[in-house]
Image (cartoon, rainbow, N blue to C red; front, side, top):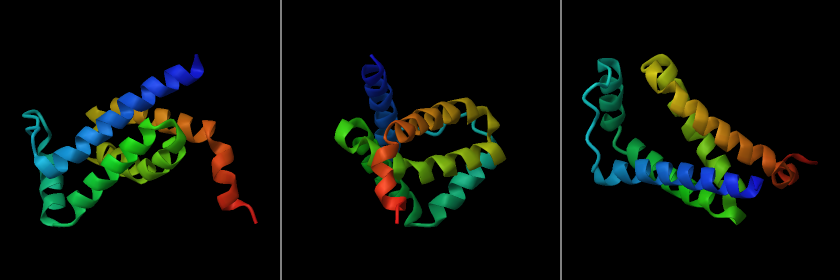
Length: 126
């Protein structure tokens, strides 16, 4: 039962990241009308750096795909940690209204990391 719940949560989380990453390339989702002005300025600043959004978008797509596949789930979680850190810091400093969603995503990725801890041990052992 635990593996089925984790699969569904990873599938939904992975699809969210794939969607967000593809949007950075294709721009098919409009910006929300109620987005705080500070967040709009931050997003415009990110867009000024030409390579940043494609890099983040590619990492989101790859991380989302890896998270969905059970065999590569541990790697997908590691790929998504820096992205989630940036999302968390952006929401803390600019738009705290998005924190609940970010905290849920962090909890799901943390669960995957904890559940696959033995796969990370060879990287930190002498």
